[in-house]
Image (cartoon, rainbow, N blue to C red; front, side, top):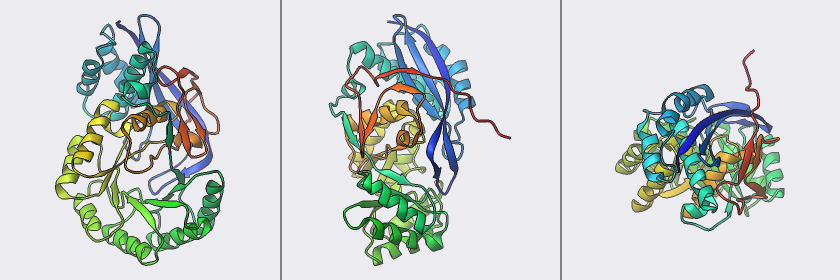
Length: 365
């Protein structure tokens, strides 16, 4: 069955709470949804989120990549030859991982729809319920403690605390959150590259000495500073999770070679889709690294694909798939839902997405 069209849809949707990290502050999800249509009129969907400060991807850039290069290369080709099509996507252009991920996922979604099975089953699994953490946006200790209590009341048992905006006050922030939620909740930290190596060791050792029971620390230093990442990993007991330092296989090979981290966070929009993500998970497992599957600020399309990957492959730590939970409302019809701290995938073909509604993008000024 041939691919009849590759379409793009620009989406914008508000968050119910501002999302703040050491790298950025946002109040909306700005994203591109790619739709791959076969000759029978079936559609598969994938997503390329705009995250200037992390991946460098923009909606305009991803759309141009899909429309001018990837889409024309796929049109008229056999949609059922999934491995070949995904390989062509990866070879079509250098970089542009978010655009590649959107098309890769759309091809997988279409294949699952054509077979009449959920995407997780196409990937080799059966789980339709995937636990997730929830992020506590960066802020002062009082606000973080209040947010932590609220999230615990909503049923979340794993909290990801955004730090790295102020190393001098980060220990107090962690202390305030631990005091607010008690011992029954797991806390992980994400510095989003916000510390120097010395700051990272100082804060993490302070957390350890205070007995605050932190599960892991994500990307404590700049993504390019693998020597610094290894230096931190060698001097603390808390596991270090590489995120922005690992986009693709070559990055992970270098992290493994340098023993720079204990774990890796695999994200579809960083690595280029489900096809390369599975390679990353297999490579990490083969070398004894822990794994998390995470997300950017995405809709039900991107999160559904990532949750399907977790449902099939599993991870060593709870996934980081709360992004669509932050939406005040969604321009996507169908797909996943949240049941407390669980992503619930629909028992429907593919991702279970029925349609997307284009919404005018935010503009400066």
